[in-house]
Image: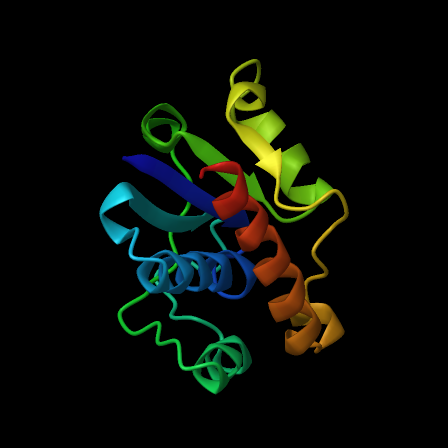
Length: 144
């Protein structure tokens, strides 16, 4: 089983979108049994909060639910237990580097070769959806 963790700043927009998009993709491919997928934040700002309403609406627009999600912060245990940890932007990478010096590089990588824009600031949840879908398709292709 491949364990995948998505990470963003607050775990209320991009990382839960990645979590639920990839869960949907693996289910549609009949591969759910081969994956454990979760998401987390680098910050503590949103701990306990649900998916941000516009992000939830974007997921629902594509038939994907995210009920029950509550933001949480990444832990050292996550770093040990997950096979692949995908972060959304360079700021997330800096947080990971400061939180887990000397350990984060072996499992943490960017979802895309470019930053996934934070829709909290851009307001463009569709562009974020498109970027995260691209990254999730890449993950599935890589893990065939």
